[in-house]
Image (tube, rainbow, N blue to C red; front, side, top):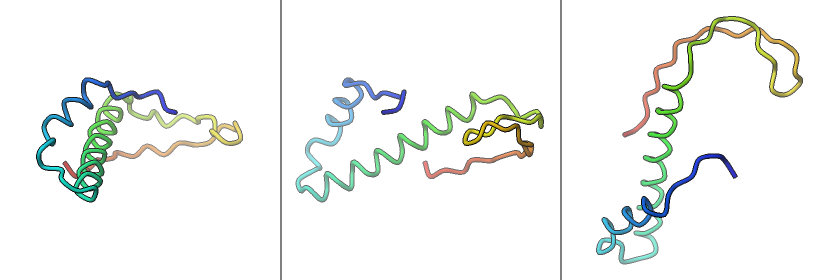
Length: 81
């Protein structure tokens, strides 16, 4: 499991806003997928904003540990909101 957690209060709040609209299992699954995607997009946006800009210095490879060159790129994240 990852280090990010969704509180029970948030889950209860989301369920309360959709209670009457979710009549079938298909409706529930569709709504959950939409909520999951929105939450993931917002979380990725927030985490990317926390990152400091790359400095172009070599960084250890996560697979082999050797220092590898890092390309400095500017990323514009355009996620569906």
